[in-house]
Amino acid sequence: MTTDSNQPAHRRLRARFVAISWRDLAVSFGPVVLIAIAAIWLAVWLVQPAPPRTVTLSAGPEGSSFWSAAQRYKTILARDGITLNVLTSEGSRQNVERLADDKQNVDLGLVQGGVSQGLDTEGLVSLGSMFYAPISVFYRGDRVTKLSDFAGKRIAIGREGSGARALSLTLLKANGIEPGGPTKLTAYDGQEAAQALIDGRVDAAMLTGDTATGPTMGKLIRTPGVRLMDFAQADAYTRRFTYLNQLTLPRGVFDLGRNLPAQPVHVISPTVELVARESLHPALSDLLIEAAREVHGKANLLQRAGEFPSAQVHEFPISDDAARYYKSGKGFLYRHLPFWIASLADRIVVLLVPIIVVLIPAFRLVPSLYSWRVKSRLYRWYGALIALEREALADDAHTEYQQLRHRLDAVEAAVNRLKIPLAYADQFYVLREHIGFVRARLDAMNAEPGASDGAGAAGGDAVQRAGGVPPQADDPPGDPASEKTSKAT
Image (cartoon, rainbow, N blue to C red; front, side, top):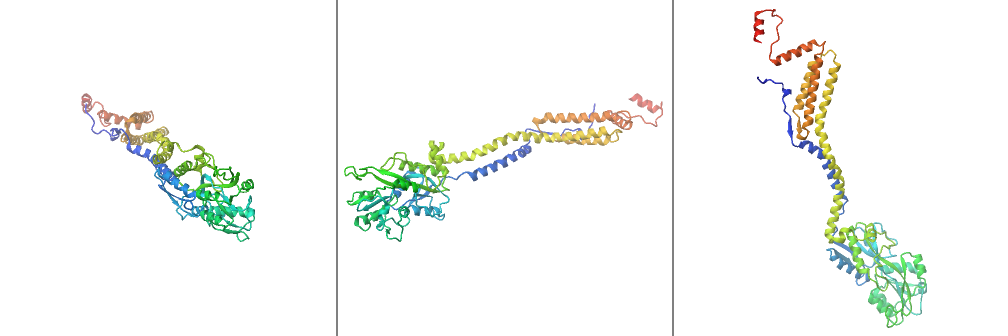
C-alpha cells in the first residue's frame, strides 16, 4: 500500500501545542497590570510621606512658662530622633501671627486663650489644651476685688505681642478701661512689671502664662504690701468669656509657714493650647501629645493629675488626629514598635491595603480571561461552520457544493495551524470532529437524488482516490482493450 504524497494541505496537522500561550497570558494580565499601577499611584498620592525629623515651635520669652515647657518637649522628642527648634517670641499673639503666615517656617505654637481676635486663624488646628495660665493681678494698697477699681491708676499689662497684653486689654475693656483714657497702661511685663510694682512705678501688674515665671510670682507674693487680687466676679467672667476657667487657690498654697495667701483666692484662667498648622504630620501629632502628657500630666497647685493635656479647646478646632488620639490613644503599631519603624510600617500598610483590595479580585479574573481568549480562537470557527451548513441547506440544487467544500477546506486548514495550549487540546480535537461532521453532511447532501452532476463528480473523486480509472464512453462493449483492462483490474 502506497502513501499519497499529494495529500491536500488542509489534511496536514500543523497545529502547535504549547504549555502556556504567553501572548494570551500577557493580554490577560495587561488590564490587571494597568489597574495595579493606577492603584499604586493613587496610594502613593494619598499616603503621607515620612514624618520630618525637624519641627519648629514658637514658644515665648526666654524663661517664661511657655519657654520652659517647650524645652521639655524638645528633650522628650529627641528620644525618638525628632529635633524641636524652639523660637523665642513676644508671646501668644506673635505665635499665632507666625503660624498664620505661610512664609514663616513655624509648625507649632503655644497659644493662650483669648489672644487671637482679629487674626486670620484659618488652617490652624489645636492639639488640645496643655495647662492653665491664670491671669494674676498683683497690686498695692487696700483690698481690691474688681478690675474696675483700677480705673485712673497705672497698670502694667505686658508688652506688644504678648498674651498677657491681649487678654488684659480684653478684660479691662469689659470694665470700661481702654487705652487713651485716664488709666495709664504701660508695657511692662514679667520681671520688669514686678520690679515696677515693688518700686511704686505702677499700681497694679497683670501677669499671665507667657510673661510670668515661678521666681517672679514667688517674689511678688512674698513682698510686703503687695496683694494678689481675688476675682469676686470670677464666675461672671467665665460666663462672658467662654475660654476662661475659674480656679481657686487655697489658703497657704504658696507658703504654708507664712500662710500665703491668708485667704482663698479666686482667679480666672484661660488654657494654653498647642496650636499647629493643618499640614502637621499625623505621626508627629501623636508624638507631641505624648510629650505634653509627660510634661503636663502631673498634679500641681492648679490642676489634678491627668487633667492635661485634654481635648478641651476654645478658639481653634481640634485636629482630626488629636481627636482620634484622645478617643483611642496611640495606634497599634506605635504602641508596640519604635517610632520610626512604626511610621514606616504604617505607611506600608496604608499603601498595600488598597492595592491588595484591587488586585485580589483582578487576579481572580485573569484565569477566566485567559481561558476566554484561548477558547475564543476555537469558538469563532464554529460560526463559519454554522454558516456553511446553513448555505448547504438553502442550496436545494446543490450547485454550490464545490465552493462550500473549498471554504470548509480553508476552515480546516486554518484550524490545523492554530497555536493551542495543551490544556485545551481536547476542545481542539472536538472542533476537528465537528469539521469532519460538516464535511460528511455536505457529501451526503450532494449524493442525494437530483444531484447527479455533483454525485458524479464526487464519484469521480472517490474513484481517483481509490486508484481506479473510470470507463470511457467511446469504448464499445466487448472491445478487446476493455476486456484486457477488466481482466487486469
